[in-house]
Amino acid sequence: MTLPLHVVILAAGQGSRMKSSLPKVLHKVAGKPMLHHVIDTARALGSAGIHGVIGHGADQVKAQTPAEDIHWAMQSEQLGTGHAVAQALPNLPDEARVLILYGDVPLTRAETLRHLAEQVSEAAIGLLTVELDNPDGYGRIVRDEGGNVQSIVEQKDASGDQLRIREVNTGILGVSARHLKEWLPQLSNSNAQGEYYLTDVIEMAVKEDIAVKVAHPQTGFEVQGVNNRIQLAELERWYQAEEARRLMTEGASLADPARIDVRGNLSIGQDIVIDVNVVFEGEVTLEDNVEIGPHCFIRNAVLRQGARIDAHSIIDGADVGPGAQVGPFARLRPGTELAKDAKVGNFVETKKAVVGEGSKINHLSYVGDAFLGRNVNVGAGTITCNYDGVNKHQTRLGDNVFVGSNTALVAPVSVADGATIGAGSTITRDVETDELAVARGRQRNIQDWQRPQKK
Image 1 (tube, helix red, strand yellow):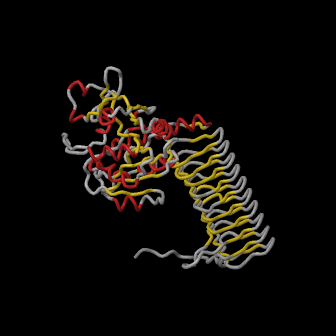
Image 2 (cartoon, helix red, strand yellow; image 1 turned 90 degrees about the vertical axis):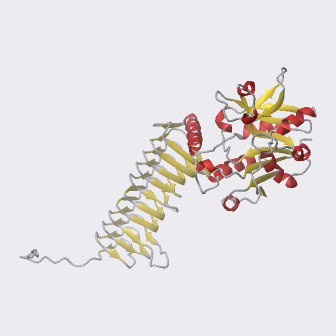
């Protein structure tokens, strides 16, 4: 019977080289804290238990990681990886496989870890290793003549011959809980760092004839840790390059694969066109034939078939209907819904606005807390006055309404089907079907007017 899988995530380090008051594991890759990437991967593995070992900035880490499925353990003193894992031991059942991950190694694939976990039993431990052209700083994997792993030697404790070894320890390890509880109390800190190394359990396993089975990641970036902001930026670029490849494989044309950022989950249909410097955040769906111009920001949105977003537009919490057009320089705020073939043009802002099929708000307007029917035309400079200083109120425009330029619609107000609003009006009362509403001061022309002169 396969033992249940428990995951221990080490996240207690200060990360002094980050030069930051923020705990290292809360620094973000692709818009998400590194620790959260690791937690999401642990969940994807179907873990029976997730255990986080925290220390520096523990309150911040817990506050920014709302997760009822995590068992937290405190490492008050940073005395090495072996000491860190020991803090989680009381919460680990004896009958379990334990996968040990790191909060600052965020991008290890679930497939890689699943393969590693499959190696673990009462008779074997699993070790994730990688070969590097430059292994500087890593513990070396020492094998015997038969290729069997014998031990891991940290760089500061390695001999000259051992330093030439290119296969290195990633720190990611799978071992039974029963063995951990037996071996961790035996660890010694008699080494150059004066720390309790988790890696010493490899030698203990060899002495007890426990097999050491090795797995490898697809690429070194999967197991790259972050110690400074340079490494953080390197991981970010690798992640974005992988996302760009995925998108192009799934049917997107990218004007420049190096100039796109995905900070969440982006799902796409076919024949998508994305220009440069577009940022996606949160949950975004692009249906077939969507086109997005340069320098756009799209968050928690759905862009339906054939929608077009022109340059420098912000789509945030909106549903953009089939064939709808947005921008350039438009801002759709949360609650905006554009129906088929609707248009929101340049320098227009919407919020909680339902814009009906074929309706247009072409330029320089604010439409908030509003419902627009079909084929409505909203002229330039129109605003819905939706806030009275305490509460928000709704504006409703029926089908085929025409709103002249520079109109203020003072909510709550309703304009029925086919009505027309004269330019420059301030509308404070409902307008009935097919009526013309004009609400502005009468024009006076004064002859022989003399402009004031400077004294």
